[in-house]
Image (cartoon, rainbow, N blue to C red; front, side, top):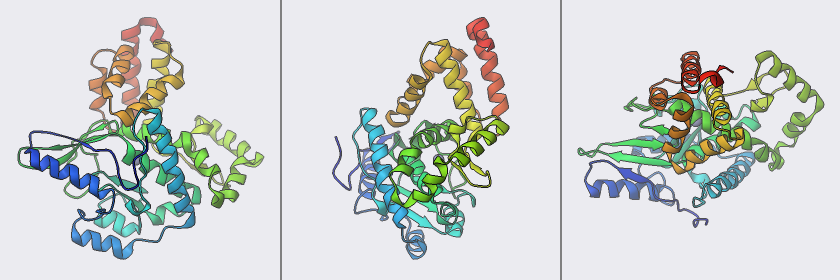
Length: 339
Ligand SMILES: [Zn+2]
């Protein structure tokens, strides 16, 4: 089922807050998706965005339409209603506004705000490359269409309760934000994997990207890809983009390596095809049924492994995570875990 234009499914709101406060937030989220978009963004910020926002290019408009189709297919596959994110909810803004007013990383390319149903894209970053621009749109859209839930506490304070596989606020530096979230590294790894798997569809359907498509399909680029993948010991399918000088785009590499290992180990130990396990993880991003993943992880890595994983910080501790997982897989499965 596809929802009418300007509508999206309700977002779950939990917590000990007053029912009317929760209802207010629920309505805000729904109306932000349609004509009320922007009403709930603080006025000074709204004005700044309006004054500096850049008109979307033809490439970007095509990418938004196609990214909606791709993500709707994923929603349908997860048994969920489909809905389109209107172009008006996606804002291409200059780097300074992205970094200063929104408090995002200067080199960051995009950010998704669930309470406001908005996507902000750092145009100075994203527009360096037309394929990358497409990729960022798809990535952020997967965030915004993922499972989300809010918490309103007894004092009326709101915070993100769930965002895809992430629990709690994302560990971002947004002004005044709390850094209490967990599983955000896993959330980013999954969103990036879903993006990578679907990027070819996006590129192939966009007539603005003929030049880039020809390059990616050329023998020269294939050879270069193999060479670089060999040097870096990574799967060539995991690049998002390769330029003629051999520069690659491969975001959240450390996080995705951990995810790949988890998927591989689960599929070996529990006799699944790797794609089946990937699919299960992808679906949970949209359905929010985190326990399904917890169950798979604990069966391979031991009883408290899901909890331990939840306490880990992204990226920086990747080797520690891998060591922990390998050790506990051995303890849980005996010799089978030696591989
Ligand atoms: Zn992301």
